[in-house]
Length: 325
Image (tube, rainbow, N blue to C red):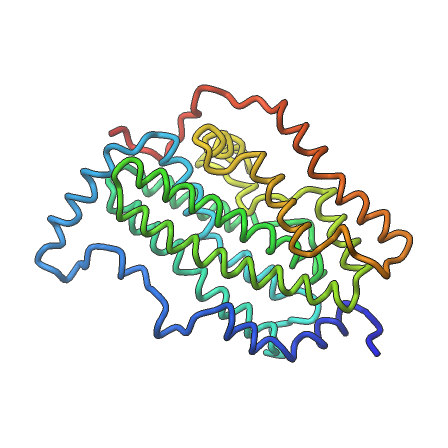
């Protein structure tokens, strides 16, 4: 019988990690790689293909570039996310257990995203790559704090939410690229979004399994994360010479203006998670966890009302990242 401590629950679920890897991740030798979507540099047509890419890139609007760059920088800060998750209770660097195997495989898949977007931005001719690289290094240096500590329950709530949020963002950027006639970028974003959705399904399944064996503590963890709000991985985003986090709000405004990721999306993701984990019908809870369940069930409507009052600036912030067309 489980004592329902975090560590014991993680060890109990660890027996299924190989099955999670097989179901939700793709073997390295068969999954797509960034080179599949970029002009091959060893081809005689390389320069012509780059020229075509740059011509199409000219028609993409300013806020679009800000969002694409912000998404890329977020993906490039992957080392921070991996190191954070590897410190979760029940994982650990030294044991090389099932959970560390999952996280390394997951990291390998995620690493392709920033690599691909970085190369696309470099080839586009629209981006001041040095300024973007400074921003990326700052984000890695400034660190990351999603408010989860080493608690796997809170971390899996965070990753379940965040993977779905990144799916929404990449998918919408791809849709906009298609509208502007950039079919290659549309395909790039769709492939990345597909990965993010697979990863979301995995992490939400981890939470579902924990609800089955430790429902009250999982419910309290869910409430904790939503009370404190899910912070974005790029919350500390900044440009050269600016304070930590100064660029994030402007990046977020750009995403809201063009409809890539909005306050309504945040609420919609919360609703989806509540349905996914059948929160409303959860039983066998402690009195405290029942209150947490009731709080969570009312939260989306409360947040939706707040989001209606949100005012987004009409003018775009002038970033150092984008070179005028």
